[in-house]
Length: 269
Ligand SMILES: C[S@@+](CC[C@H](N)C(=O)[O-])C[C@H]1O[C@@H](n2cnc3c(N)ncnc32)[C@H](O)[C@@H]1O
Image 1: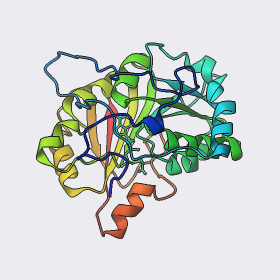
Image 2: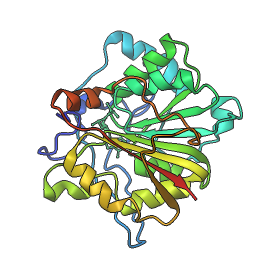
Image 3: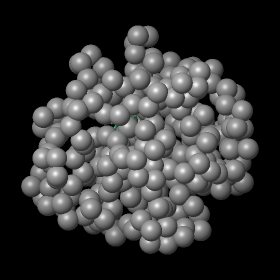
Image 4: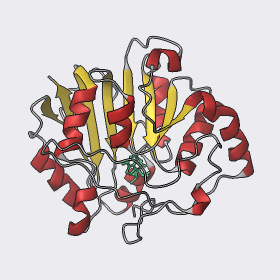
């Protein structure tokens, strides 16, 4: 069901996904950077990326070339000046969504949180193109996109204590035991997210995968900077939108298989 990453394939960036080095939004050639955190915590080990093949239509390419330079960035060591990029000081702060896929819920939520800056982080270029197209077409001004691994993007491109929220919706479950180390929710990622959230900031994770839910259940209390809130019925004191508005692509696939959706919230202390 989780077709964007093919766990069985040796990880590589397909030629169809590469553009010439100077093309907007191209990933740099070679192995993607992977920080050695060396802090005793576990971080997802990606190797490099693997994608289902996907190219953009001519219309999408034209839309991308026109709009990516303003609204998109590729993973780098640039610490993003959010006020400059969004052209404002957002009253609701900035939320980063890691693994936005095709951005269905991102585009549905952003118009309801216009006070907030939304940064969608994704590796998969056709998914980013779909979201970019929706943002342009629907005049959604509070979405920006970063192409790259979410862990490296959070680590390199965002300041500590800078985010109002982080969202991880339906992350790849990597069901085989030998691939569990690739799961994005790990002690290290939770620590990194906690470092990037500002006090009171919210982490929201959702999964439809029972085994991944058990994995996350084991980790809910592991990061001292994060207060685990579970999924409270009354969310009136949660300062960010938690309703996805629309069933995400992968949520829909899970629901078709009668999977139970499990949601998690944490607040930075
Ligand atoms: C199962 S899909 C879910 C997409 C979307 N959130 C949804 O619910 O439809 C997981 C997505 O996370 C992306 N992804 C996986 N690992 C990532 C990482 N380390 N950084 C950024 N995106 C990642 C994949 O490319 C894929 O699009």
